[in-house]
Length: 165
Length: 328
Image 1 (tube, each protein chain N blue to C red):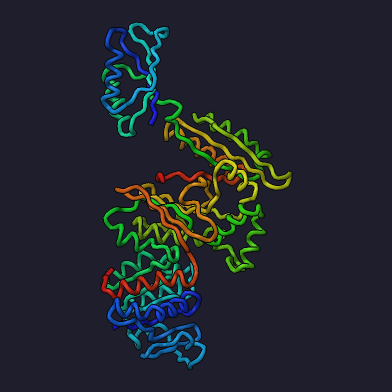
Image 2: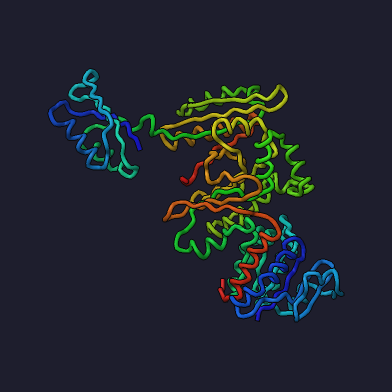
């Protein structure tokens, strides 16, 4: 899996190579390093490391980095957890934008939105793909959408997740 | 000795009876002698013959008037095969017949969902207490091995979750809606005309049938004591051709999926977006079940879920297991 880690390293020789050696020690493969000297805070320089690592290596690596330096955040575009659902009913009359706003409010992002409007009378459909940085945020967003769909009389058809193929 | 008392001679009952006769030579080699149906019980009466009741006997020969309980006492079969009509609300009269057989120490094989849906706990406990086999592979997904797969082959690798399509009628309707852009009402009408859906299709399109099978699977495979009321259920009645078209454009099929998880105890039957290349995306009236296991990832099995003959194969397998002496 891809990780995007923001650490703060002491501005002294060898700090960066030590951090990168730690990444290798836990099976990580460095993809890019951004040493943000311009954004230093006192003695600490932010460094953004994007790396590829097997899933089981994430936790031990982050713990090791925390012991050696300051870990500011762990995340990144590819570490977000996706989720898709289709809303069916009088989607546009019931202000589907309120639902997408609620997704943002819960801390998740709307990645994709597509719709099909059959006719004025027939129900329309909207397919939404969202993503969140962690399982808790995703669950919160999902529950919020479920509540709102129920309140607006829309059928929510969720993507099937569960065990990998 | 392998004397069978058969209750119910409808779609599955008759198919089982015919299958047994067709398979007689192979079963004789397997078991030492071919099992024989020595009694057939229908609502209209009983037909008994120690030399074997013919499949056409209920039309051709005289019947006796004999209750199921009296027949169990009179015949004392080696296996009681219970294939009467399933009542999902009460599980009766099947549950009472099964209880009566188990009380008398007579092994039971059934494909009747009602009794196992409504009385799973009490019937399995009774069978265990009496040390008498109660087998019911035919209650779930017809010919696809699920319960027996779990009990025998997966005994070393617990199932933690399953997802699947357990109702062929609703899957057929969704497939036709996708293929031809039909509205739900039109696809349902077509299914009824072809005999894939009943005049009252509620059990199939409302997800009741799938939920019943889900409950039996969850109890037996996950060991979770779910009841019918615990299943969050949404059928396919609200699905539109527009929704199916939109989902397809984005790479998804809409399928009625039954899901249960051992850890969270969540269970639902609901329309879901299934990626088109998923192993769960089966077409037409096929069924599919994906098992997630504790130690070896997931695997998926699909095939014909319903049909008299298909279900009869599951019943016959269970009968063979009983006659071979498996005590559970």
